[in-house]
Image (cartoon, rainbow, N blue to C red; front, top):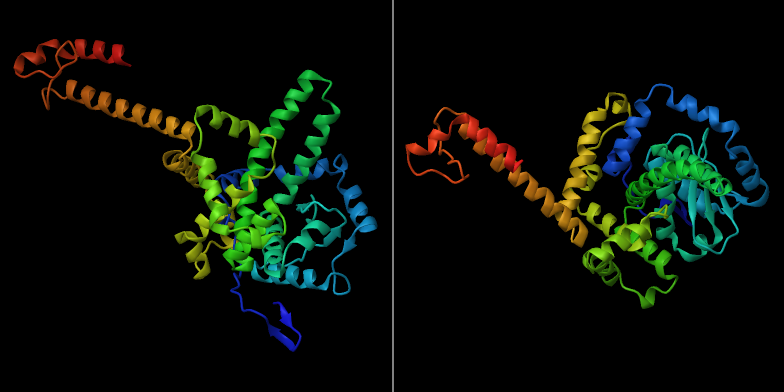
Length: 377
C-alpha cells in the first residue's frame, strides 16, 4: 500500500483480489485468443525456442545499462506503486521496472521468459500519483495476463517486416501475421486499462490519465465529459466513407484511439461485471485450467455481435441491418418450409408465393413448395 510520511499507514485503502484470474478483466476478444493459445500443446515451448532469435536478452541489457531501474533507492514512489499493484492483483513475483529517457509518454511490458516494465520520463512527468498508479496497474495487468510474450513477438515481427520489405511475398506473409497480432494487441490494451482501474480504483484518475496522453498536461483546459463526447461523435459521425477511413486509420496502430479507450473503460466501470469483481466475486487463477475454449469463443462472438448491434458507426449499422434482414429472411423461409411439410398444419402457400385463402392453396404440394424455396434462396 502507499504510505504517508507519518508511518506505515496507507494513504487510501484499496480492495485486494486474492487469486484473481486475468479472465476477470480481460476483454472478450483478448480472452478467447489467450485461452486458445494457452490450450495449444507445446505453444510455450515453441515461443521459448524463438528466444534465440528474438532480441530479448539485448533489450534487458540495454535497459539495465542505459535506463534507471526502479527500486527503494531510485524512483521510490514508482517502486511503491509497483509493489502495491502486484499486491492488489496478487502477482507473486514483482517484475523489474525501468524508467528510460524519452519525452514521449509511453509504457510497455515485454519479455518472453519474464516480463519487464518500462516507462518513459515523459509519462512520469506528465501524470500525477493516482494517474500513474493506474498506468502501473495497466502494465502489471499485462504481466498477469501473459501479454508480454505475444507483445515481444509482435515487436520482433514488425521489425522483421521492415527489414524484408523488399521481398514482396515474404513481406505480405509477415504483415498478415502482424495485422492479426495488432488487432489482438489493441484488445489487450482494453484489458490492461481495466486492470489499471482495478489497481487504482479511481475511474476519474484513469480518465484524466488517458486525457493527458491525448492532450498533454493542461487539465485546466480540458473536461472529461467533453472528452468522452468526442468518442461518441467519432463513432457515429460521417457516412460509409468515414467508416472505411476509420478502419484504415486504426490498422497500423498497436493501441486503440485514446477517446475510444476512455469510453470503453467508462462503460466497463459502470457494468455489473466490474461491480461483481469489486464485491469479491471473480474467476480464480486456480480455475484457469478448466476454462472452456468454446465458451470463451462464444462469449467473444457474442460481444462482437452486441457491438455491431449497438454501434452508431454507419458501416456497423449497415452490417447489423444486413445481418438482421438475413436473420428475418431465414426465419421467414424456415417457417414457410415447416408449414409446407407439416401435412396441412398452419397456413398454406400458393404457387405464386402468397398465402392461400382456402384449401385449394394446398394443391401445389411439397414439390412446388421446394421450387419456391429454391427460387427464394
